Image 1 (tube, rainbow, N blue to C red):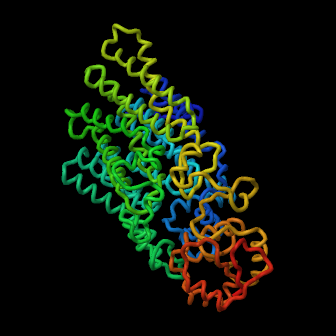
Image 2 (tube, rainbow, N blue to C red; image 1 turned 135 degrees about the vertical axis):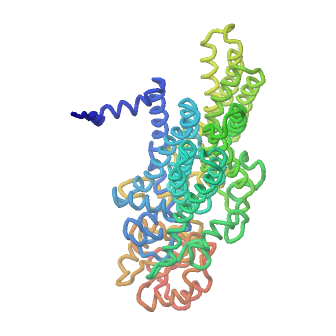
Length: 633
């Protein structure tokens, strides 16, 4: 008896795929696809427009990207210079991305900054997909828009710090975890663990701060029985640890010569993980002090203070009320309800980050709160949808919705008042819009007594009241240089409360451009002249290293301009114990180093090294050294 085989579906044409991307899912309303494209377009505009205005932004990381584009060994270790003498004080994943971008497109300001901008745009789109999965397209769009318009999100997209990549990876871990809640499959949990491991490879222990949220969501709502959920979480944890430990273990077992690990006290990656980038950040020891000098005094109101408030605080009240409203809506839902799982995930994510950041005694830069932004945006997007639905059935929830809009508008006006010369009209527009929204929302409870367009007017007015402040601060990032060393979002005047948020021109322009190099090279040393660099190149001879100098503020511009191997004495700010005087003497004896630059504004470095250079070297008087002294050793 003949058999028939069903024909295979023909592959979709590229034009059909493009239409599907713009249109959205088949079961979505027709406005979803265009609205999503609009949100992503806004994010792309904010992230990419005049991207190179900051030059190389943080020259510390730009120098490492230059080194990675010149040397595969330097790329692997995240070394500061092509000679791989010392690494930066962070794990290398973001440097790998920047280094590969520089190899692909040529080293320039644009190739160094592009990966962060693309990571932020990707995070906006992925947050939409994550929130939409649990709460529908409207909540997903609101969450994506909230993330795209969060000032600190835009700021980190326009510099070359690792935080933009961290945010993308954290959102990806949430997406995989919610997929695991949907399917109950361990593979999705394992992927979440792998992504968190990559987050660790980006900013070490800060990448693990999302783990309690992911664990709580799946432990509560995962479909399998409890023991199966526990086994799945153990598998995910094992994968996370394996991915996290891969690079430190490889560095430890490296068979040949390895660079000193910057930021550590003994040259090991493990000391960096637990010390300077670990407990030192929380408790202020291990070189991780100075927390108050950037992010203000630790305490329960730090998220709203002068330094941090304009970066993240705009939607915090809405997110808090939205979390409560969402949990109320799903109070009778089954254990495996995806909405509750998402609320727990983003709620714990936000709570952990707020508690840690608010109490952190060590180094705390305001831009660290970019890791909090996706959770706030998700809770705000889901919260607006939940409050809208609850307000239709309850006067109490209608009142809560109105108070939330009014309170969020009041907070926006308060934050804007800290920069009185910036967009003063907004301090009038936002309260008026909030009043219109509060009055118009009454139509939710008595729709028959008011025209339908009243709700539309209320919705538009509410959007203005909630979004105008952060949107204005985000737009202010575009067209002004940002200091990658301490990124402060918003208008230039906002940086006055955050100890240096504006870019400070210095050094030579990036290749082929006229932008400033950027002022984030480090805290030690001083800028060097083109004359001095030309002298060093002319007299380097067979020496492996062009020069040795204290602190990355001195050496990073040299590395960027020349691509030569340079010894950064003391690492980032001159405080690392490398090289010692004995090590420097050996480098000189072996013919690897002929010149050392001493002086400047370094606040660290070894006095033994300086003393040895002054005792055994000869000062070079024939070249300008900008207040420093060049020694031939």
